[in-house]
Length: 107
Image (cartoon, rainbow, N blue to C red; front, side, top):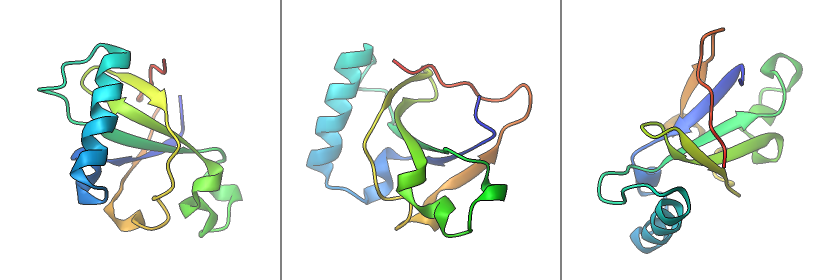
């Protein structure tokens, strides 16, 4: 269970082309057996280290992060190669996990 994670919702929020989003969504739905008609793709970024030991700019750096793409509704995730957190840091919602917090089922 991560101590902290960040989320980008609403189907990439227009940062990528609709065609790219559709191809990602199709592959994700096929791989995880999700309903593509009702699914909103969420992107999660989990930093490798506790932010207390990182420089402030390093938290924004995708090189120190695990990227997941999937669904909070279904709690199904796959590891994803991503690199836009540092560019759109203000668009992400940031969450601190408590002891009964969010667990990600990664396939």
